[in-house]
Image 1 (cartoon, one colour):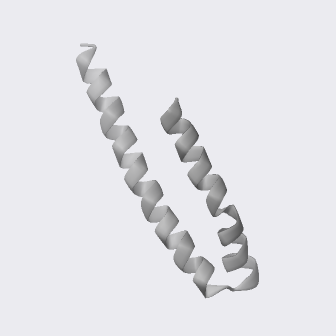
Image 2 (tube, rainbow, N blue to C red):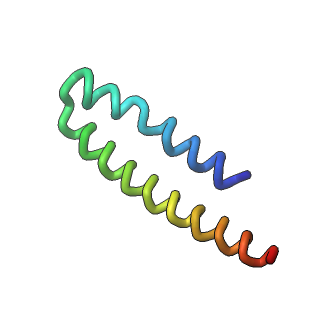
Image 3 (cartoon, rainbow, N blue to C red):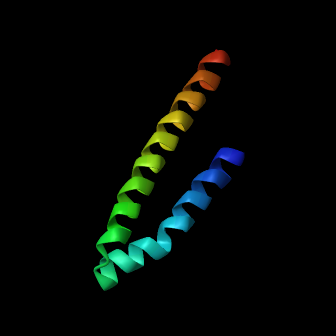
Length: 59
């Protein structure tokens, strides 16, 4: 479950940058959002791979 906690922490850490970008038009916050979303994508792929490996071992 630590992967899930890491995922939640990453999403939570982006909340203020989302607000700054969408509500206040802060372009630097938009860059941080894009970088955070790329990290989220990478983490999601790692989790998908891990889940698939565990699932395949159980067969």
